[in-house]
Each structure stands twice: as structure tokens, then as C-alpha cells.
Length: 276
Length: 319
Image (cartoon, rainbow over all chains, first blue to last red; front, top):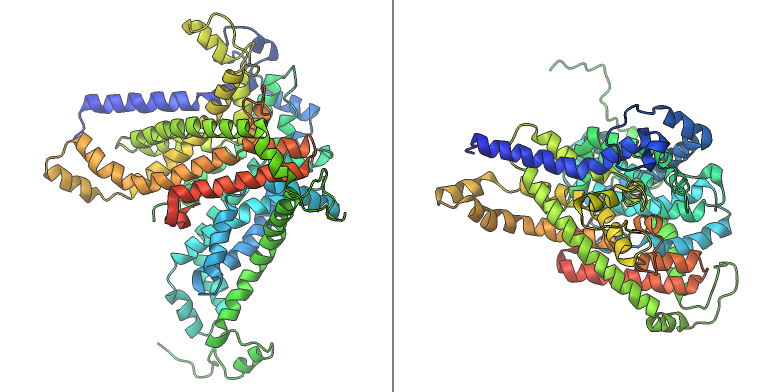
């Protein structure tokens, strides 16, 4: 690459401007959260809080059960990712290693399942869960999130297992491992990055859900997830923008941290298979 | 290699029959496919219970005249009234039109922004890794948080957008973003684009990574300039990835619920009511579950047709 200094400077300018404009909404969220309420209600807007109001976080925790909501979100994510990973590890391995009748059609079904609109599935699930008495409990959310995660994680894990040479298991079996033993002792350790990426992505899917939480948990405030809780802070006429922004910062933070530190894993999950 | 004959070899003949005690020797080649089915079973059972059965229930419901679903209740008689109502209802065609408009606007904007930023940070410069990370950061912002951000930016009294428009002299009075149909549509579209473009950037970058450097070197040797290299190498190599990305983006807009529902609730005057929002509203605001299921089934069929049309036989690569 021949790079002239002027071209390089122009490039930097372009990158900085683009990032600045595109990330401004995130910056604005943080500034709004840290501004005193009265300063938000006059124009021109202040683009820099003179005295950051760090107390806002304590204030919203006192007014709303935010730690509880975050805890529920974590429980729902752990539960749904746990169930999904358990079934998808086996299913993904099976789809990758065995030539079964019905395997391809199952694969095709899984792909179609990804196209299911949540708004369609939420209707029968509501009926079923009401029958089972699960409405309002976290279990309804855990099962509903599994509908989002399982098709995705099964397919993603199949892709990871496909990249691991079969000779590994064959060698393990020659050494006296059973097929299952070969899978657990040899293949899963090798596939750990793939498992981590899949679990992380499942976590993000569960954490970001609103439709199911809004439908199944409305009546039981103690079981609200953080996403659902935030939306109740948005008033019909009056919204305390600094409070809702502070709550939104807390909800966005875990995912943003995961993204910044484990981006390679997450993005690997996003782009896997798209380059075939 | 020093061998200790005193130590028993790991595989003793006595350990082989011990596995037979369970009656099924899974290591035997003839039994191997059983193991395959066994491993699939938990996933198949779970998917059957939480996806396939509910799907059947909703298709079944769409052919009954039901309000609130009671699974225990006796089935209502089979009827196509929901679909008849649907196709003669102006609200449904309006929702189709809104969905279509939103798909076109959001997809095009996401692609312009996403491919543009992808190409920009693919250049070689110091700090490229950080720039890549930041350019796609909105992908990591939960949709509800994006809604909070833009609901405040588009706030009619103290929002940034109005202040900015007035400063620029584009308007002389404040716009009520959420009570004007066109403005509300624009607000929804802007929010969705901001949330959706990073995915296109990520995919574009992944596609650019997979283009061999040799292609460019060969083109340079042949005297192609930067523009020609872009048109003749970069774009054709990106096409497959961009095709899949486009389908995924369209499906996302098709199915998205939370952004629109929390930002505008489908209003004002149903100007932002897509098929997804209509399905939900009919089911949980008016409790017409049968009718709502019909809308949902039509939405699903449209999703499947749209993706099949666009990717055709390469559907396997859809994520």
C-alpha cells in the first residue's frame, strides 16, 4: 500500500467523524443519565454535564427494584441458555457427525424456525403457559427464550463441529473411548471457543427480548426482566429522562462489555456460515 | 519407551463385556446410527414442544372464531372467517404497506451506512482494530435501550432533533414526532437503521477479510486503478455475503416488535403498524386470538416466501 500522509489524514478524519456521528446516541444516553433533571428541560441542550450526577444510580435503585429486574434477566438468560446449550450440543454433534435419515430435513426446519415471528408464537405459547399455570413465572420466559435460542445454537454448533476433523474421535475410539466418551473427552474440549461463542450469543438474545416478557410477566412486577422494567419508566405524558436513561445504561452495560471484550467470539457466531 | 509389564494395560478384556450389561453396545458400527438419533432426541422433543406444537395450535386457531385461547375448551367449528375478514380489512393492507415501506427504507439505509463504514474501517491505518470495534458498537445495544435513546432525541419539547432542525433553519416550529404519521414513521426508521446498520458492517468486514490479497496484487500488476479494483474484485466477492445479509436484515424488519411497539405502539393513526405489531395488538389488546393468529400465519408465509425468493437454493447459509 502506498499511503500518502494527506490520504492517511483524510482517512483518520473520516473514521473519527463517522464513529463520532454513529456513536453519538450512546454518548447522549450517558450524558442524559448524568444530567440533573432540571437542566434537561431547557434549550439549548448541554452536551457536557457540568456536575455529573452519579447519585442517579442510587436514586433509581431506591425508587425501583432495578437490581431485582437485572437479577431476573440474568436468571432467565442462564436458564434459557442452559437448556438450549444442553440440547444443542448433542443435536449439533449428531447433525455434524451422523448421516441420519431426516437429518437434512430437520436442519431445514431449524432454518425455518429462525424466521418465525415472535409475535405469532407468543399467542399459542400464552395459551399453553396459562394452562400450565406458568404465566407470571420466570419459567415461561425461560422456555420462550429457548424458542429463540435453540434453532440458532444447534445450527451454530453444528458448524463448529464440522470444522473439527473426524480423525480426532477415531483416534480416541481406537484408544478405547466409547463414542460418547470421545465426544466428551476429545471433541468438546476442542470446541470450547465455539461453545463459549454460542452461549454468549444466546445470552444476548435472551437479554434483549421484550415481546415475551411483556406478554407473560405483566401481572407480576417482582418477576419483571430489566428490559420490561425500563419500558414502564417511560410515561404516557411525563418521563424522567435522566432516570430512564440511567436504567438503560445499566441494562446496556453488560452486553456492551461482553461485546468489547469478546467481540471475536460474538462476531464469529454472527458471520459463521455466511462466507460459504 | 520404558515399559512396565506389571502395570495392567488400559484395555483389559474384562472391561469389554461390562459395557454389554446395558444391553446396547453403542460402539458397534451397526448401532452407531442409534446413537445419532439418541443425541438428537432431546432437541427434537424440546423443539416439538415449544415450537412445532404451538405453531400447530396457532394455525388451528386461525381457522376458529376464538377470542381468548382456552386449550382445554372444546374446539370451535372450522371456519375461514378470520382470513376472509383479514383480506377484506383495510387495516391489514395498510399494515402490509407500512411493513413494505419500512423494509425498503430501513434496508437501503442500513446497507448504505453498513457497507460504507465496513469499507472505511477496512483500510489500513493505526487503530484499525479499535475503529472496527466501535463502528459496530450499536449492535451491542439492546433494542429497548435504543428506543429510550431515540425517544428522548425525538422528544417534542426538549429533544435534540427539534433543536437541531430549528438551529439549521429547516423548520420554524417544533415537530411533534410521535403525533404526526410521517414524522413517527421517520423516527421509527431512524431508530431501526441505527440498530441495524452494524450487522451489515460486521458482515461486510467478514466478507472483505475473505478476499485473497492476491486478487488485488494481480489486478495492480495488470494496471487496474483503485476504482476498477473495487468494481471488479471487491463488489463481486462481497455479493454472496451481502445477499445473505440483505435477507437477514429484511427478515429482522419484518419481524421486529419491540422497537416499534415501545416507540410508537404502532401509531399515530396506524402509520407505524407493521404486520408484527398488528398481530400482537389484535391478540393482546383486543383479545381476538383467532384473527391475530391469521395475521401471524400470513406474516410467516410472507417471510418464508420472501427469503426463498431472494436466496433460492442457497437457503442453508441463512443464519
